[in-house]
Structure formats: structure tokens, C-alpha cells
Image (cartoon, rainbow, N blue to C red; front, side, top):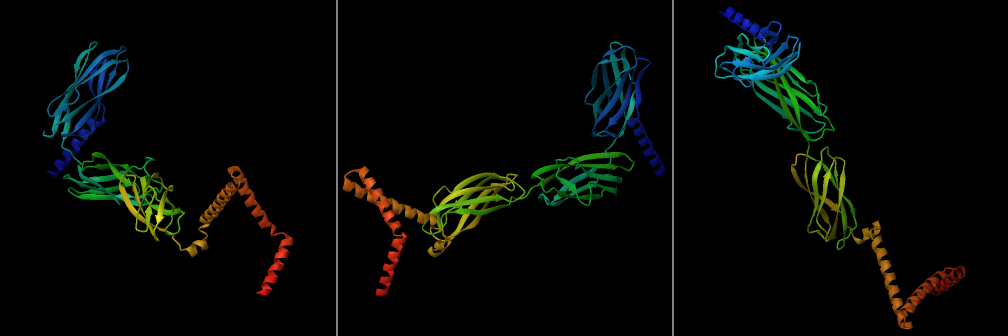
Length: 443
């Protein structure tokens, strides 16, 4: 009994191969034309599936065959999707391909079913092929529960990832030589295999058994954050040697949380009770973009923000930076509190608060570090300006004329400057030194 079963499987397989792969002439009209059956795709024909049957027609005449019409004739459970093909003309000696699509009812029984081809042309009339049988079987070599996992779910540029493929053999017979292959040939895919390669083989999967394979990949260091579609192909054979192919796509997410550096770039205020500007710089030191970025200087008990508190700095690419300027009034030593808001490549929102030390010194350290040079220069300039205005007013009162008052002021001031420098002539220095010595002796 077992031998009979094996022999029947072999005969069925040979029948399928002869029907699917060999060229079979289904219509032959002497020296006029012939129609050949080329193939069924997919093969074998399975219940509940769609099949395309391909033919070729050859004009054996020395004249053109015009306005040909070819029909596919089927019976249940084969149901045509397309029944007619029109060919405007076939040149002498020319061979043209044509095809039909049909479905097989999933509720039918397995077995051999009949189809035929009808040809019509005004020049040659009508011909019908002899009926030929199409073996229809249940779906075989079925792999189900196909699932994918990527660890980690989001892979950073330069890091490694494991891609695992899980599946199960739902047939009553084993599957042989199961080959899984990741196609990384597309140059837009920023991945390379590590240790495992891109192809793995499982020799046998028993009926009802599950299996899994894992691919080790590394992401290129300069990979852009994105979702990448990686093609996966499965090739396997059922127990009778029939080949099956299944194509899938695996999505791999490449990205990382943005990294940044916040610094106090510049400051003009170093003393409490004073106001001035502070300049903050934000640098993108990570491999991914920072989008729609803004900096907000938060008010605290240590200082007041006397300018606008929020500055939009926009998008920051890796190794890029932007600055933001604020005016503050310092009440006491303390940190600047800065809120950084931004989005990553996948538009995830981030909001973080960072602290920056604002240097505040006492008067001793301010003088030591020379941090009041600008203020002192401003005070000297103010003193000179006030002195000039006072002298102009005195000159105006004396001369009763604003113009003469201005001349009086400048002549008086320059006179005082000249008298001051005259004290440093050699004669005056000697005289003043002698006077100083006499004064010292008296003391």
C-alpha cells in the first residue's frame, strides 16, 4: 500500500512537470498556424489561488493573419478572470505570446479539471483545441506564523542589531532545504552582515514544527535616521520536491535620541544688582538631527529675565550649533535654568531643563579679574563730559554767548592740560624734587 502511494505521488509530480514546464501544442492547423501551451504560473495550481496560463501563437502562413480572437473555455471550479484576447495582426512566421488568468474555487475537490482554447479569425475561421486537463491540488508547502523581530527595536548608527525570523510548518509532511536570504544589495540600505552572512539554510522542518533564524547586522556609522525596508526571500521544497518561493519585507528602524551640549558662551554681567546680557550656545553632538529647537531662559529667585525669554533656533544637524542671547538682572548668585525643546527625526517631542553656572563675583574679585574695565571707562567718560558741560556753562555766563562760552571751555581745559604736562619738564622736575626734599626734612 505504501509503495502504491509513493508511485502515485511520483506519477502526479511527473504529470505536473510535463504540463508546467514543457511546450505542448494545443491547436495545429497544418501550414496555417499553431498554438502552444507554455506554462502555468504559479505551479502547481492550488485550490483558492489565482493562476496565469501562458500560450504562444505562430503564423505558419506566408500571409498576415488579421483580427484574431482567442478565448479560454473553463468549467467549475476553474473560473476565468479574463476570457478573451484580441490580436490585431500576426505577420508571416511571427510568434506572439498571450495569456489568461483564472482562479480555482477553494471549496472544490482536488483532481483534474478541463480547459480548452478557441481561436477565430475571419481569414481562417474558427478552431477549438482538444480539451486538456489541469491537475489542481490543495495548497502545499505552507509556512505560516511568519514573524520578525529586531533587537534593539531602534538601532543607533554604528551599533549592531539582531534580526530574527520565526515561522512554522503547517503541513502534514516535512519541508526541505529552507533557505532564508536578506537582500542588502541596494546601496541605500546602511547595513552589513556580521558573522552570520545574509543567507541561512535549515535542512528539514518537520510537520507542525517551528523554526527561527537570526541575522547579525551592523549599521553604518553615517546612516541617516529612517525606517529601512529590507527584502527577505524564503525558498523551500515540499516532500515531493516541488519548489516554493515566498517574499517578505522587514522594517528596521535606525535612529538615536539626539545628544547636545549647552554652554554659557558669553556674559557681560558678573555682579549682583547689575543687568547685562548672557549668550547661550547649543551644539548638536549626536549622529541625528535636532528639529524645531527652541531655548527658554526660565526666571528664578536669583535673576530676572528682562528680554524675551524664548528664542527659536530651528534645526540643528550633527556637528552644528546655534546661539541665543538674553538680558538678565542678577539678584544673587545661582544657576541659569534653561529649557530645551526639540523633536527627533521621527517627530518625537523632547523637553529638558538644564542648569548653567552664571559667574557672580564680589568687588575684590571683579577688580582682580579686570571685569569692570568697561564700567570704569564709562565713568571716566561721563566725568569728562560733565566737566566739559560745567565749564561751557561758566563760559556762557561770563561771555553772554554760547559760542564764546564753548571757546572759553575748550581753551580753559586745554590750558589746564598744558600746565599739567609742563610740570614734567626737566627744570620743573628738578625744582619740584628740591621742594619735596625740603618739605620732607621739615617733617
